[in-house]
Image (cartoon, rainbow, N blue to C red; front, side):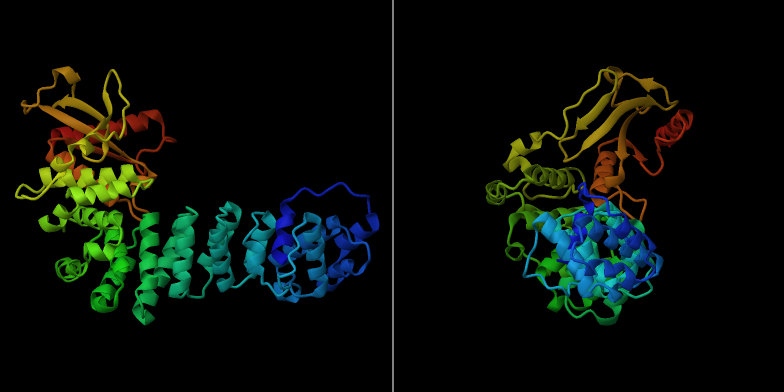
Length: 465
């Protein structure tokens, strides 16, 4: 009921008869008791209820009043009921004892953001969880929650860390300061009292989706899982490997870690073909996939099972198969197993079809990714027309330009994601000089002359090396 009342703060206040006396009582009130006494009359309007709740929100922000002082007060509850009735949303099953987190979880109004400073850390986490359930991406409220959770001195437990990271992933809210705070607390929780792998699996999945690279968190997770491998759920092991691949991370004890854990996973435990494909693709990115594992995703039966799934991500599946296929063809010269020759039409999957008259752009490599631009230079950095390029000439260089935008880089680190790192590795193997342009270095707000100098410097470096 309280939630619905605060949600109505967003709605336009209808035109009502002027009530200067009541308005003066509200504006001159100095205490919670005085402001709530407005509800004791017989003709309290929705406009007055809204004004009272707004004033209480401001007082909570200023520290003039504390929420426990009024959230269960019958007069406050009555104001909430007035707002609910005005919106036709009354629900008799809702108890009046709902806490403030419920008020916040369905509203994007500024008033709700002001109230965040007055609630406890567990309530803030509950607000984020409920926003996630409602699929409500209120940036005003999320920023307020992020700021207040980050500055709160209470340590989040592992479940709270999991809930916050899940909310950030679902709501696409990768606030780096909050990520750093939550991952720091998660590291402490893993070291101190982690008993089951389920909460860790959730944390790993979320940081993978957010592409946030916290070396301390990943190392702590790897150590714990290696030590407790016998009690770990298979889906949590899958989550770990996929996240490690996305973030291009290997633990300190990489050889022993992979040797112990990889044999514990099987296609049967994956349950779904796409999960097994994700695992093999991840191990390929980490350079840990065996020929036997790779061959499993190139059988006709397996590829048909992917097609039968009719998943909306079918293009993504094909691109992962292309990544794996290009790896065995160009980076694993001794590989003798199956490849995409069994279903060659997948190699024609279109990634991009954009072209340009003066320079080759958006080139589909048929390796599971595209090249943003391809150009040719001699060793003195003089440009060469595409039709005049001679691949056999040592004086001519083929350049692949790869733009790395926000989604291509890890959060919390200036490194490409695992998939982009594989693309760079494959292009280098195919004879390209790869010119990467991270968004962190090439800023559109910089002067044009500075951006030209930046590209010229990088180009000279890779051509003349």
